[in-house]
Image 1 (tube, rainbow, N blue to C red):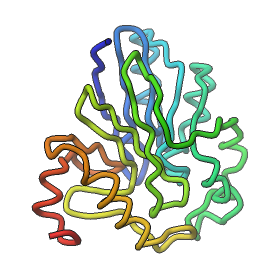
Image 2 (image 1 turned 45 degrees about the vertical axis):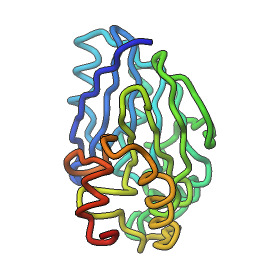
Image 3 (image 1 turned 90 degrees about the vertical axis):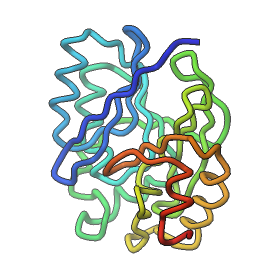
Image 4 (image 1 turned 120 degrees about the vertical axis):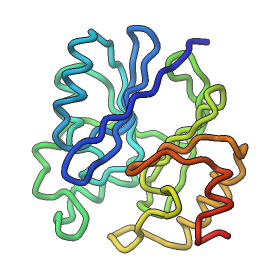
Length: 207
């Protein structure tokens, strides 16, 4: 099993956390926000072989740089097709209709289940609520999970945009994230890293 390093790039006007996971020269990306130049430059200068891009969900601030990243690397993009409806909703309502050309890349549908990423076992977990197709990526050997905009430090993702559902979001957090070991690191779509234990003790929606 290869050791994976996680590097965070905060991209775009909404300061989206975009994650570069590397194991030697091999790499994958989890989400790629708008204005991806810093990440693209790092990948190019280090000659990283990025073969896959995994999406937590398909809001524009998390996928706005994917086209440029795929063009540079040729990586396969994975995401849950339940979020494709966002391409037909205006940006003022939380969609990406005006940016369809920017988002013209193909997305391979990804469902809940087991997968191997960079020679490490990963659990793909469907965690709807912020969007119907939200996915979380649990790396048990690393003790961490990437949750997109499902959960933040002492907060949770918004559910007022089309497709959002507050009951589903709280259920996803309680039944699919908070069952993980307390020391599990939570890498969110915005803001600092937290842990399952910290959120169980301090998140006002759950204490």
